[in-house]
Image (cartoon, rainbow, N blue to C red; front, side, top):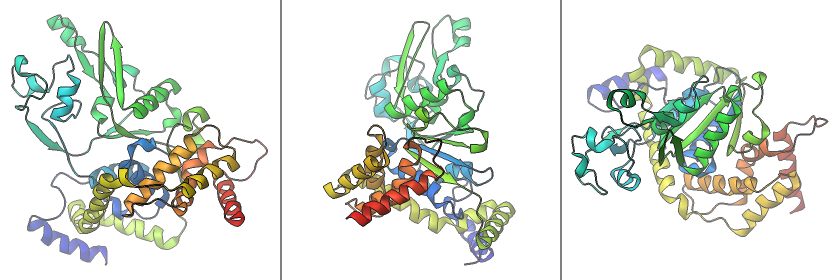
Length: 376
């Protein structure tokens, strides 16, 4: 269907109260042309955050940040305690019991009522947070630190949440992650893997939930991430400028339509967005039930051995990503085909680097897959 026709219908839908959320003006995820590997990697991480995030390397202007924000827009809104800077549910507030000015006070409750399982905590629905981490951010800004104002004016030690608190239950996006300080990248990867941020400053010790999908992006011309850090990202998507003339024309058409009337464009794509939203929600619900039979596990292990992958993160990532892929497609069983489909982004950044090797990592993986297939 032509975009112009969709937009016309969308105007009518908007007038009738249908279509996109009134505050959502992000470019629709389903309208992004091409870049299938990047989109699949993002989707799999949303379905199973244990995969460990996505590193996206590619040219500028290929839609990396657009895709992250667009994917968050597809996800259903989350419920949190009203005003909670950590985006927690009432159950999480009760469990954490952080010694800080928390959600209860913000809701007007007295400190005495801020007890575990306080049923009076009000909640609100918010969009899935997408937090950009600027390159110049300090560790205090990222992890949180002492509230200096409270210390000076009230004489109390209070924790000031950082970017990790804001990103809880959402996305933490780092553009040009290869230019970020290695120490900070290490901290982020640790928190993303454990799901907890632990801060100890000036006699205060705080531990809060920090479950987010870590997405890093960069341009390989500006330098690679150290292999030790790169290995800890779950998936590594590589994107390039699209060379198909038809797709390039479609990119321009859609972008012009979006720039002309963003709300109409978003509304026009709402059916596709809703369909994807339903698939994601169903996959998140059933991913834990997906089984991976021994032949698929053996195939993943043999592939990693043939490629000389160090450690066992390769097989673990292949298993998690394959199950997430099966869940996304409504299946309860991951197969060897799932392993093959996800092998390149799961292993590309885990191969040993040989200075004499001229073959691209993706081609080496494809060759190993072909050899395994021939043997069997």
